[in-house]
Length: 178
Image 1: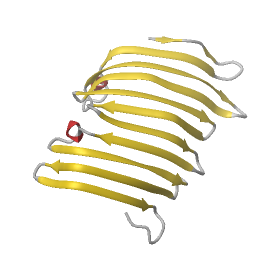
Image 2: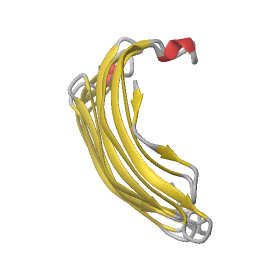
Image 3: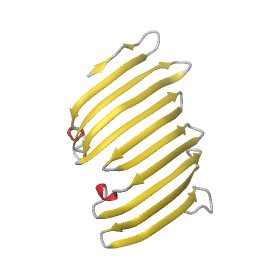
């Protein structure tokens, strides 16, 4: 269901609410079967002098995807060539990813946090607990990643790691390592 005004004159502008249920992305992408419900609101305009200005609120994307339960909500704002991700929260099978930040043609500043008490929900044969967080900063041409990772009782089939702690900073500059 789609509702709200869409105008073309004097500039393209919109204030639209999208709602749907029982949506199967597998109809368009056969490798992604599921059953999803969505509620999304977007408003904005495409001005010849000011460029694209838009707000997007994914208020709810819930259901199953690849037989996994998921819940996603996100809020973002676009001002010309700058994307401001106010919040992104993804949850599935007790696992959670959160992110926020901004990206533009000249700068990137993103923060993320992940908690995966059930990694086997996504990787068959995986077990344990994994938490991670970090930032991506710099420019799109030379981003710098800072990450901290902690794991307990990690296992992938027959490979087991009782405890893991990793802190890393990396980038594309000469001398940088992964």
